[in-house]
Length: 250
Image (cartoon, rainbow, N blue to C red; front, side, top):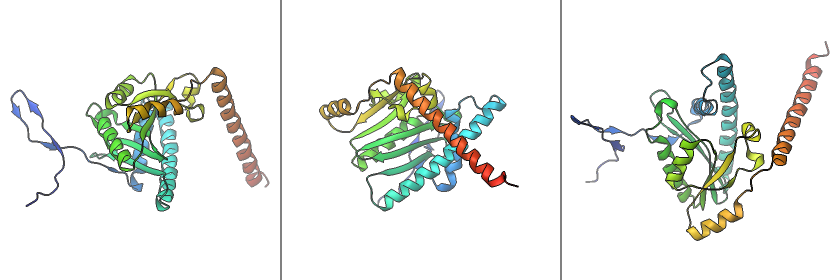
């Protein structure tokens, strides 16, 4: 008789004996009701020192709000494309925890490439192999969808992350396009694009050569930064005009 499916377990050993095996935390798809908790964890990673000062707490709170809005939008777009059986696919994965998610990652499929948009592990849950488990789950998902590669962007000074990606098989093959850079990257923080190919090494080299982005010049960074600043000024002027039109006239 076949045994029922049981959760994966890990064994803890000490010098005095063996402890009973305990189940590994479950990796599953996040539900809409859990988006706020996922956004809070991602904001914690984006603003790592946000809990130390009042200003930092405000920055982290604002970042959590922006991330939550972004997650809702991407989940809705993903549901739309899934209903139309499009090549685009979106999935938000989390590692279950007693007091909220221990880790979160976002997966977006664009054509033949699986993009790892974000990956964050709660500070108190690090060095437990959670990020590596999420990466392996990502690779399995990419293979299931018949993707040719998994792609991500990471800051070059984030050594623990780059070491992890390299150990899993990712290789740096170019730079993050200027239009995809965060503000701090536009101000000088180097961000590289990494890739894990799921095809042969020969095809990997050809694909990387064709897709690799050249290093952004100072002119490129300056132009993109100016464009975003002008957009913010224009947006502020529009909102100000709307506010005056709605409330300025008695």
